[in-house]
Image 1 (cartoon, rainbow, N blue to C red):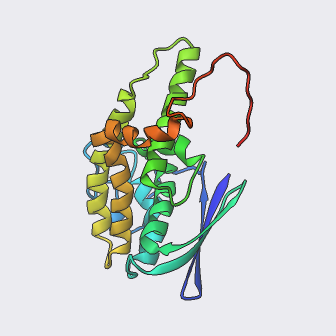
Image 2: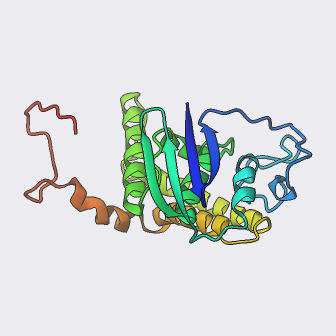
Image 3: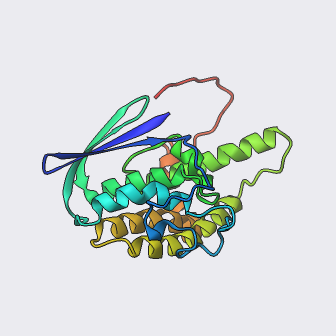
Length: 239
């Protein structure tokens, strides 16, 4: 399964095909990769990988082409962006900051990084250009569904979302180091602002999940202001 991003900037196309289940060779030397992609270069303090069995950061290697392509373009530059998935196609005319953020988020979430791997279920249901509310809604819903399966299999579910907060705290540590890594490679602000806006999404879960959930609480209510519940009637509706 793959997702294709097509950026049209001043009539010039940039195409990126992201394979969601791609493999990564941890032992490859990668002599042609940039210095900033090496694992030891601003390595995340919580990274479980070691230079003995992995020479380069998986997420950095996967992002290298995108970072190089956009490093000299301003974040406010407008682009026509098409995103093609197996089921549907999206289109938006927006800033490079928003478009590159969406692409980078997908690439990072499907990389072989053990920490970013927590985001892979979200990536399998990729929503380009997601807003803050959409990110919180989807992250919480996917996490709770995983807890439901844990419950059904006899495990102990985390209905209070404490695990989701912990995951995003780990992502925050990664974000700080990865920012420094990409900062060393950039000549302009598109990549940095795109990464910053992507990182801000996970920070909102780490620091203010409850307040974020309160903001989307009205979306879970019916016309009478009550939360929708099953009152014994069997209703199957496809929206």
